[in-house]
Length: 143
Image 1 (tube, rainbow, N blue to C red):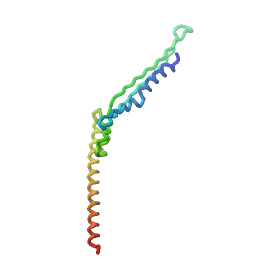
Image 2 (image 1 turned 180 degrees about the vertical axis):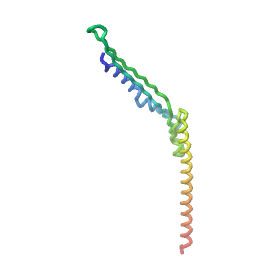
Image 3 (image 1 turned 60 degrees about the horizontal axis):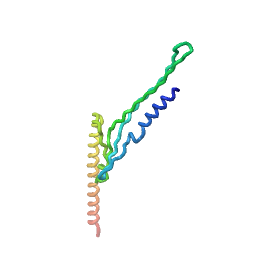
Image 4 (image 1 turned 90 degrees about the horizontal axis):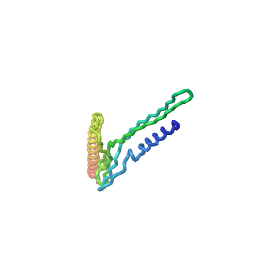
């Protein structure tokens, strides 16, 4: 047996785990919603070979390879076809509790989105007010 045989067999098995179907799962559809599972795949691999002499003229050798993989569900992507607002159409539902940094970033981004919405609303009101005032000014100066 050559050194390549156990390594090739082990790598082929590990590469089977790396297929995209194992990272992004089969979508599940129900009531206008699509749920897409997302996983984390971790792989480890090792190989070795040894050669020695038992008695004069007789040699022995050994080869080996091993590998392992874990597939861990980490989130779902929810696509809601019935959502009225664009921001509600796609959501990521994390299965792991967020670490403190991710939680802080999430909270800050939520606040930033609120501020942006308020700014847009104020800008829209100001534009409407400007249009109204222009129209009134036009009506005043029209003979």
